[in-house]
Amino acid sequence: MSGSNDLGQWYRSIPPITRVWFTASIVVPLAVVLRIVDPLHLMLYGNSIIKYFIMFMAVFIHEINFEYLVKLYFLNKYSSRLETSTFNDRPADYVFCLTFLWLCNIIVRLILPMPGLMGSMIMCVIYIWCQLNKEEIQSFWFGTQFKAMYIPWAILIFNWIVDRTFLADFCGIVIGHLYYFLVFKYPQDFDGVRLLQTPKFLYRYFPNKRRSTSGFGTAPINRRQQSEDIENTTVHNRRVFGGRGHVLGTG
Image (cartoon, rainbow, N blue to C red):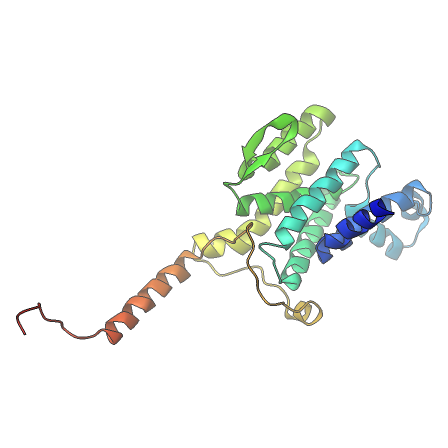
């Protein structure tokens, strides 16, 4: 009884958006294994609506094996960190982030021969978190440690050695970098406009909560905004302390 309570407590501790993704990534593969759903049959004999639905569900489909369990571990670890740090109390922004990554993966699947998109989708989130925490030291297989910026490439190389494939991981890195560049890198390092904005209607369904602090995933500082703040502070100080001043003993 204690074990079930601990499991339930752990499950409830997963951040809500990550919990939905994590749950779907368990329910859908189990439904396929138990023959409750047969994606191949639906793709062959279903109507166009069902075929598109199966295509969009590809991010949750994976053969149940050891690799699948590792992917679930990475999903929970890095999505939870991203949701509770960079997107802390901003559920609409995180929902939009995952939606953008999801749609990009669907587009890639229409071009490249990838049977499932779970690995690519998870790699997107890993890459984004690692770019926002480049200097964090992360443990990898067999006790090795890397800076976070190298973790996506370490995973890619390891999967290539084990499975002789790196396509899904590489696509995840490219898509993750696209989001990171549009949302963080370009606006903050190149003084560009933010090209990717969360649609306003999402804030009605996922309103922002009161902001709190967290130890991971602080977004890069906007250099232009930082210089403007310093300049404004300097001007304000000149106005407040606007006297010419006198050397002591000369007044």
